[in-house]
Length: 339
Image (cartoon, rainbow, N blue to C red; front, side, top):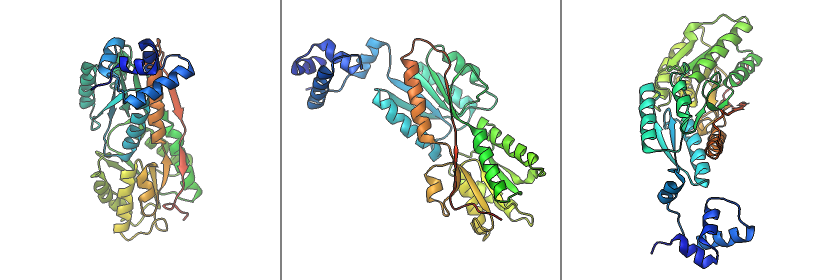
């Protein structure tokens, strides 16, 4: 027989209102809360979220859109996000936009039609083609952007400082005496890829190094596992040159694995013949051989912080845009060395 709210109240010796206050995390005495929580556990009581939602006008569901679920960077964000939101009684509905703007718009519409309480969107386009849409939706339900364009002041934003991370990479490689540095980026015009390339070009210019456009490699669909092989084929072309680069930076770890594969297939030793720097710091950088030097984008923390911001917004009466900037760290491992 399904346990009801009244059953919990009766066994605990408290009113139904007290049980309800405990379930909704409203103030009650420590003694009453302890008794109610123990009774809930004993009876294995499970609140009816649908009924609870009808009463409070909430669905207790958060829509989450990511570029692609294959990339372990997004998996880490989603996992930590799901656990944190679940602690406050929310369920996550995940969807992948495959980095396509029109698909993202369709997913947003479907989420809105289904009645989600909020939206969390991971990675947005550099041109902000949906930023106005996000701001409009934020007037109805909270929208939190992860790694969006910081120039947009009308959106709730959590991001890792992309410029700082890329500056650390370039300064580190220069300190190892690398001057011929390859740059591998995703083909899409995401803010993160564009930002990294801008820093790459600026740092070369600052050091008086002429930019060799042939060393900039574009990889389409860079969040799919297939991109490892695509990257390897393209990177082999620049590593097989007489004046090959002495170091390569890859904008995510899938592409970095492709660069490692290319070097090995050409018989190059990492890091003696070629240094490889990755980006994101997922499990791939740890299990790669050699273990990869990488920019730590703290994906798990991003998921938790985005969830915290969403919960705050849901419990707030105002919709003033909020933002949180995190700072990356360069994790030095075995894939880089001096020349």
